[in-house]
Image (cartoon, rainbow, N blue to C red):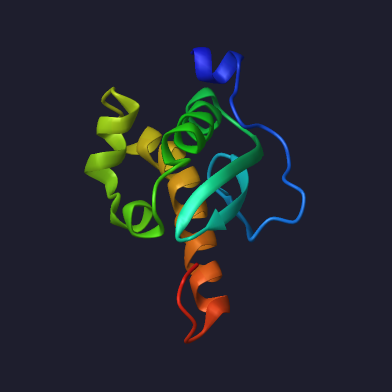
Amino acid sequence: MDHYQNPRNKGRIDNPDFSTAQYNPSCGDSISIEGLIQDDVLIELAFIGKGCVISQAVASLLTEFFIGKTIEEVLAVDNKKLLEIIGMKLGPNRIKCALLSLIALKDGVLEYKDSLGDKDVK
């Protein structure tokens, strides 16, 4: 509840390296995530969103968790690891709410990597 009532990293980033969004049409939740990457490491993340407590709290929690992590660490997180990070069990409908931020973040990181082409990710 604290991450919902006092979200961390909510807002925008000037000149982000990536900006991506996800929308869940079944419930109306939406999340936009922006990030800065330096030397393969996420150095800043921010989100804007609206929706249920879970989608918004997880967005806050994940931005806090992933700052300082490498691109590969982000891409390695799966549903099981996400539930460990959240620290609570979620039913099948609520897991979709929680996954929204992770999907957006992974999409943004992949778009960033793709934009570099053959260059090293830095």
